[in-house]
Image 1 (cartoon, one colour):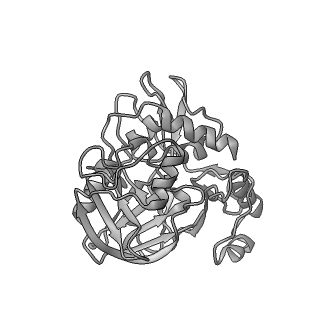
Image 2 (spheres, one colour):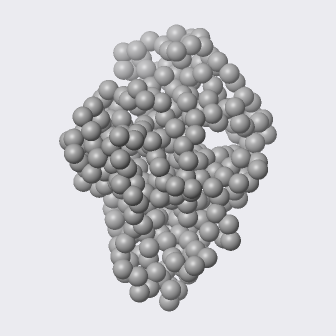
Length: 333
């Protein structure tokens, strides 16, 4: 879609944030709950050049902020109130190892102690070079990787007037950053890695690999081991019936398959169990339909008899540049 491409271009071309990203870590809920975290609001300050600058403050993706705020400009004016989507439903998969939800542009890491989950923004494959869904494991940990461009990448670069060297050595100019995790899928061509283009994190711009902020991949690399399970899924629609009976629906825009598709109006392949969820008497179907139409990327209450709402959170002080959501969420390096 042309509008989405323009926004992506503006995000990529703008000056990036210098502040180090912070991984958001949530205590895992018990008793069958999937809801974690709280949303926040943030007042745009002078110097917040783009949504990507703001996203870096909260270690989230600019595209997720666009989903939550809908009509916000890619370069918001100082004083603008921005909803920071830090509340979410955990993906409907086993809580182990690394889980990538492509539709969310998020990577979840579940440490072996089973007490928490770390959530990171992620850059994924562009149109025509999509990151595939897979169930695999970490096959190799590579510190200070070199980069050998594939023939396809070299050809695409030549078409843009750029001649790539056969091998890019390790260092600050390496597109793989300082750390890489090679996945044991296919011929090992898919990596989770850092990047020398920090503003590309949280966008669909790669050749199929998954890229992270430098501080994020450093933190993840230090924790995971070879053999760690990895699941790459595509769940734009998530739903939950919480232990207290409240029903939530979280809807992200689906991944388009062509430039002409409008992700705000594209149809969905609904997850298993959704038809039963929406037809139950405990679900307000009208509210669920509105959530599917709006596609806000945050959990929305769709319980019968409930007022249409999203769970709100305290306003973040403009003097404080990191998430503060009480005991549920903490920022870690």
